[in-house]
Image (cartoon, rainbow, N blue to C red; front, side, top):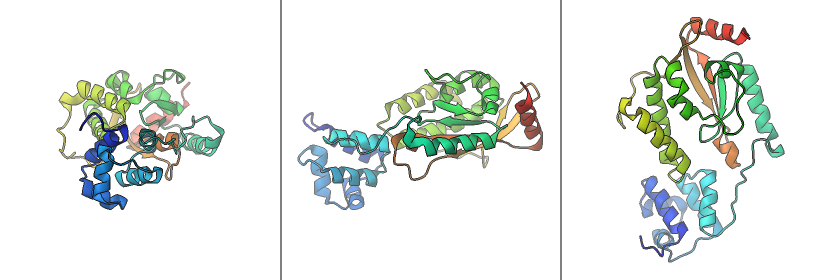
Length: 262
C-alpha cells in the first residue's frame, strides 16, 4: 500500500487480512458497501466514529485494539482501561477474591492478557511460584516462568509447552496488533518450538494433564480458565483466572497436605 495511506487504512487492512476476510466479506458483516471499505483502506474516505466501531465489531477486535483503531481514525478511545485497584472495578475484585478463597488449597492464578500474574492462591505460590509473596513490579509472567523455573517443576514440561504454544498462537493470531503478545509467542517459539507439534496437528488426549513435582510425589492436575463475560473495560476483558484441580485422589491428598504446611 502507498505511504500516503493513513494509519486507520493500514490498521483496517491488517485486521481484515488477519481475519482472512475479503473487502466484500467485511462489507457484508458491517452493513456497508464494499467500495466504502476499499476507500477507507486506501484513505480515499474517512470513517465516522460509528463506522469504526461497526467495523471493529465485524472484525471481532479486542477492546484495547478498538481504542487504537479509534485513535488511528482521529477519535478519542471509547473504552476505559482502569487499573484493577480502581473503585469502579470493586465488583470484579470481589469476584476474584471469592474465586481464590473458595479454591484453596488448590492452585489458582489471576492473569492479565499478557500472562502477568496479578494474584494467586497460597497453593499456587507454593507449587508454581516459589512460595514467596508476589512482586508488584516487575510482575511474574507465567509464560516466562514456563520457560524458566517451571521447566524443572513439570514432569511433562514438553506437553505443557505444546499446549501453551497452541494457546499463544491462537491469541496472537486473534490480536495481530498486540506486539507484546507477539513477542511472548516468539520467545516461547524459540525455546519450545522444536519440541512442539506442527501447526494444524490435532492433540490426542481430550484434556491436558500437567504433572507437577512436589516433596510428596508427582501431582496430576487439570485446569479451567474463568473469563468475565460482557466486559466493557479493557482491563476486565483481558483478565482470566486459571483454576487448577487435582486429577486424581492421590494428587488431591498431596495438594491438601501442601496447603496445610507452613
